[in-house]
Structure formats: C-alpha cells, structure tokens
Image (cartoon, one colour):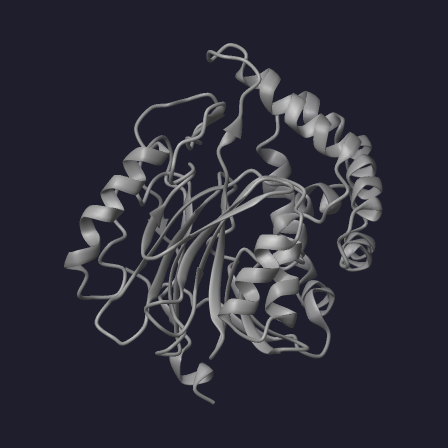
Length: 351
C-alpha cells in the first residue's frame, strides 16, 4: 500500500486566503468543478445567474471579506466561487471532553458530499489583531469552519437544524427553498464562517470569543463548538440569525439543538433522508466512545465516520495540539476512506 500524502501546511499571514488561492489556483478550480458536479443538470446551467445573486447578496451583507471572494473569483474566471463561499450545506459532529490532559479537547468531523475536500485539505497559518491562528481550510475559501488560536481558544461550526414551515418529507424541499429566499431577500448579516474568522482575528481569549459569537447576528442559524484553556471554558453556542443560547459544559453535538425546539428538524446526511447516519445516531455513538479514547482518532468510527466525512480533527488549546485527517468517498453508503496521513501540528504550534 502506497504512503498517504501529507496535508499541506501553509503560512498565509502575509497575504491571506487570496494569496493561497493564487499559489494553488489549479486546486481552486478542481474544487470548484467538484462542487458543481454535485448539482443537478438544471442547477449547473443556472450557476452563472446564481453566482451573480450570491455576489450581490455578499456585497450587501456585513461580511468584511467580500473583496477577497471577488479577488479569488477573478483569479478563477469561472462562475461558482461566490456560491461556494456563501453556501451552508454541511453536516458535522463535534464533542468536547476532558481527555488525559488539564484542558478540554475538541473533536470534530466535517461531513460534506463533495469529493476532493479530503485530499486538498490545507492547514493555513493566519493572523489578526489578536494574534495568529490555524485554519483548516481549502484554497478558494475565505471563512473559518475549524480553527485553533494557540493559547486562546478552538472553535468549529456545525450546520444547525432545518427550520420547518411545513410537515412531512414531501414538502421539505419547499422549506429549504423558503429559508434560502428569506436569507437572500431580507438578511444582511455575515455568513457564520465569516463571523468565526473575525472572532479568530480579534478575540483575545475564550470569554471574548463567547461574547462576540453570542452577540453578532449571522446570516443563517448555526451551531458553534468552543473550548478554551480550562475545564470551565467549554460551550456550545446555538444561534438563530438574531438570537443566541450559550450552553456551558462538556458536550456532544451533531446537527440538532441540544435542547429540542418546536418547528426545527435535525439534519441528516442525505437530502430528504432520515436513514442510517442521522444526527441522533452520530451524537449517541460519539457520546458512548468518549470515555474510552486512548489514541488519536480512536473515536472516529461509523456512524460518526460515514460516506460524507471529509475531515476529522482533534484540538487542544492548553496542550497546543491540532491533529487532522482528510477522507474521500468510496461509493454508496460505505464509510469514506482515509486520503491523507495524520497531520500533527504540535511542533509548529509550540514555536
């Protein structure tokens, strides 16, 4: 068996995501094609118009990174960059547990249907007013979904449950469309991944991050996992566009509110499906494994590891560790296969 490739580590403190896209332009195009390939034929034909709509919405939003997205779109020269940078269609699983050290450990998977996200995963060292941070990202993306600010905090984003105006499986597509139209027509807040990047750039510690994430409106409902340096610095922030609920203490989170709310439906990993690896199954499985973890990624087993898993991550602020693995699809409902060696940034974080 051939050796798996390494996850690329880059320092973009001097130029940010635009510099990364410029250096890895071919990878940006590869990922753009992979994302588009998942769309039905009609949606692919409508992509240029949809990208214009996404660009107009982002320019009107509170995001400070719209110019970066425009610069990356100009590099690529094809439609899709604005749509991808404003999309919010992933499902994930996350947990904070105490581990064997003195501080909390944040575990997370990122589940997204697009091929290529595992093998092109990139660990980018970025900077802001509050200091440096590490962003597990991809060339062409400007936000933060998974990040570690050494000595400050670590955070991840999970997709929130679906707001239902209707009932039953048949009308679920209507609810997806109605929620999207509501955002495009009326909401001018920044996308959650853009807000999280702002937090990494400006929040000096865990408490400042909690405050900023709880009070900053966001374009869509979102679940945010956050840990700091001590056992007391652990929480889930459950956000709608304008309201936040901060739930402190160790947690296991998938794609539902920790405390169910009427009118909301947990996310599954197949559109319109409640089968196999749904939110409840993933959460229960990970919760049962936390007390038995002895080795890195020992917890990453089905159904937490599933056909859509592209990234597995372990982060500890107090221990200064960030480990990651990329995954790629095998086909059907089989769990994704490992596509990279395990990245361990402990030595670089310690510098």
